[in-house]
Every structure is written in C-alpha cells, then in structure tokens.
Image 1: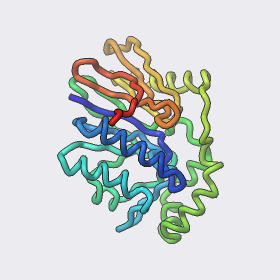
Image 2: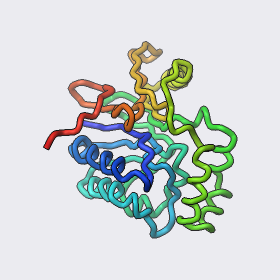
Image 3: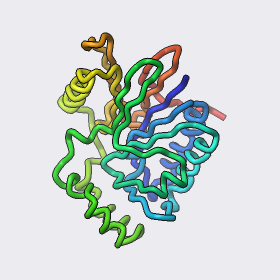
Length: 238
C-alpha cells in the first residue's frame, strides 16, 4: 500500500510555475498511490461555488479528478485558506472533503488534519462561519477572490520560518491526540516537517508533519514496507 500526504502549497493565479510544479508532483509521486491526502492550504484562497472551478486552478483540479476517475481515493482536509469547498467541488472531482479524517492504515488508527483547529486566530474564526460563506455566495467568485487577496496579509504569514516554539506547540497537540488512542497523527500548517516517535498507552506511536512543500519540498509517505516517513520531493529528470 502507498499513501501520500502533502499540503501548504498556497497556489494562486499569479504563480503558474508553482501550480505546474505541484501538478508534476501529482504525476510523479501521487499517480501510483492508493490514497492521497491533501492536508489543506493547497490554494491561497478557495470558496466553492455551484458549477464553478477557478480557471487558474483547473489544471491541478483536473489532475486529481483523473486520479479519482481511476479509482484512487483522494481526501481534501480544508486548511485556513479554504472556506468550504462546497458540494460541486466534491461532485466534479470525486474528492472527499472534510476538516479532519480518522482512518485505519493497516492496523494503525490514524488522525489526519491540517492542524489549525487548535491555533485559529479570532479573525479566522469569524471568517469560517456560515454567515460569511453566505456573503461570499452573494459576492460571487471574482469579487470574493479580490477581497480575499486584499485580506491575505491578515489571514496568515506567507513566509513562515522555522520556530522551535511553534514546533513544540504542534508536538504537544499531537501528543494529546496520541493520548486519545491514536497510533499516528499527521498534521500540516506549521510549515515545518517533523517526525517524532514516542510511546503511548497503546504502544509505539508516531507524529508527523508534512512541512512546507514549496520551500522544502517535503511530504509524508506511507509504504507497507517502510511505514510512515517524511520525504523530500526530487523531480524526475525526463
């Protein structure tokens, strides 16, 4: 079995080269996976509209649509830059969208999430409400996009450096989840790849963070033979 976990690519219309880079990763690494988990912030901004896919995202969206069409399981765990992917996105792509997911990976009870739920600032809590989603629906995709780009400086810091304090906060949160009985916890959001093994009440346990895919090219991969590992994407030379 092969499972791929990645996130925090922050794709937007001003950087087509970044979109192409992620599409190449999907083709090179994800195509032969049994399951793929996108751990949020794939997009710099996304709110789902009925019958509409943002044109600049069409290529990467269709890449995942092709995967689900081949019978692959793809999950999208919304990050702090996604504001309700909506039923049309799920219908069009075949992707299953959720805030977090609990799955069994060959006997290991695994918790997967973007990781912003325990550190969300007040502005984000306001923006991620049904009322605001309704306002976005009234505004439509183009106006909502322009407003979102104007607010992007307040939504998050795009250039996140490594911080030992932040890393420890995520490790502590993961430790609490492991204490709830999970064998594996996989998060994103911190932009710092991490892998920590520890002992829980149920035995050996692992916390992993997918890190910053654009800056460091890191992601998490599960293989039946090797288990859960943090890996660095090295594009194939064609």
